[in-house]
Amino acid sequence: MRRALFLPLCLACVPAAEARDYGQQGAVFPVIERDLLEQIHTRLTAMEKSGETKRLNQELQQRTATRVNRPEPVDGLVRASAARRWSFDPTITLETDIRGAKGELIHARGTRVNPLDSVPLRAELLFFDGDDPEQLAWALSQSRAAKLILTKGAPLELMKARQRRFYFDQGGKLIRHFGIGAVPARVRQQGRALEVSEIVLPPRQGVRP
Image (tube, rainbow, N blue to C red):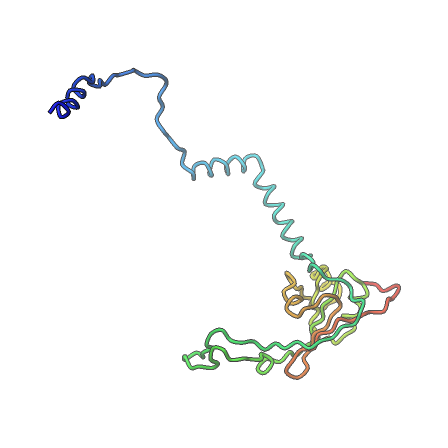
């Protein structure tokens, strides 16, 4: 009985909590966030007035023109110092069904397909460094039907000077696809496969690009 009454008595002895107003201890400001679009507009307006926008646009145009006329060279290539030749099988295994316009099945998933059976390589592919006069002279001496593909150089300048169409292996995708490590190189069809050759050029003096 005594134990049962002890806890209520203790609680009764605790003084009641009182709420107090301590007053304002400092300046109070409402929370206001500037609208993000408003900040962007203000920044753009300031850039326009200062001429920074015009300068940035001019720099962008210059960088774009430079990149178009002279793309980034393909990394990892050297001039061929030893002749190399190998066969490249372009056959692929389909990961999905290939169907026609009406839904008819043309090739089922898992089928091995050689693209050369339907689309032959009609022209040789010549890969070369357009900044190397000897490689350029070699490429221009080949068949006019050949595709001239630069791994380095200025395609627009060469087209204007040589009146020929030049391509550029952007990012080295074709070079890596065929496993080419040195230039000049040639890719041509041999039956149902492609023959890839890295060609050693004899040094020639006085060759003009």
